Length: 415
Ligand code: RAT
Ligand code: ZN
Image (cartoon, rainbow, N blue to C red; front, side, top):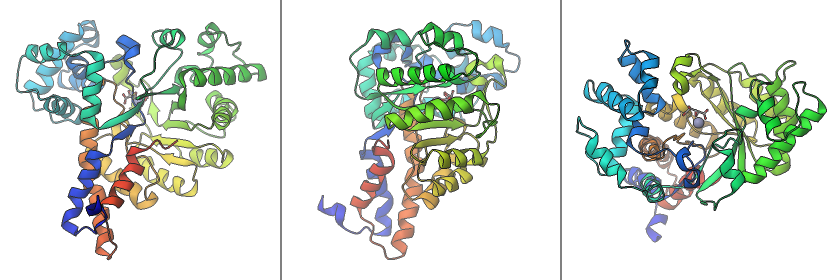
């Protein structure tokens, strides 16, 4: 421990950063994985990994002749076999999503140099969900992860209603897209759950939505609420239902409950509906909207991530102006090494340690392994360069300080 307090030489800094990144257990603030109690909603294993929607999109680029209907009609195993053939055997798997599968296999001690997936599938068959969760979290160096929970999902809701022993490593997050987006589309679903809402956004309807938010935040013990928003999202707005619902329902409820409101801004849903989950795209959003929200709701903490690279610099600057704006993660199409590197350096330079560098967005449990491995490999050198810059001024950088900072960035719940 004493050695941690010794000033490091320049050449010792990279190893000290890697030590800290490798030994501080991380908190993953945005995933799509589930507590094992959710049964089939918890996706894991080789076929889920290979049919991840990022890879499905890449398959259709490799196989322009493949019809969407033909692919979606295939069994998951057949889809996985096809993706393996096309994206790994026929051509080198250079994309980040392909590389991710190989990292997972390698970290699990499995040999990916095979044309036939049967031996790999056989290994996964020997795993149990609970045992595999332990293995994956250990390999990923993650101690806690946040789910994406949707009470309007007919498969998910009954599990919450029935109740189960919570795995303390899986935290609840109330996802709001299905309850608030495309109003009045959510009306029947909310009514079916017993909320007396109507299409007109009357005082009664807004009160009922607040009741929905409060009930479900309480039931799932939501650590924050989250919504993904299009690039056209504006605040203030005369005619946007979602803007009104956020301002009159979500922000006040988050304020009362003392939880952050996360907004993930910049997704264009289903530009190619044939691709299903893989069919969403990106657009540039308006930073003034974030600034005005932060100004009007100073007592609400806003976790903000944006999907367009073009918005990343101005988001850092907005966060400098508003302490209640916390940039988080390199979201979805930004979760690539070259972009993580650029974004992390920019955030450190503009915000010091007051942001959350990364989340995994893992949809398949196993992806925690690669997403965090790849992020560590990028964040490590970026951080090491920053400490080297400090050391070059004569500032004494110690292993203890690096560890403290890594804890602040990735090891703590920034609620
Ligand atoms: O990254 C993804 O898997 C996307 O499909 C989305 O889930 C996105 O992260 C979101 O939370 O909307
Ligand atoms: Zn996500």
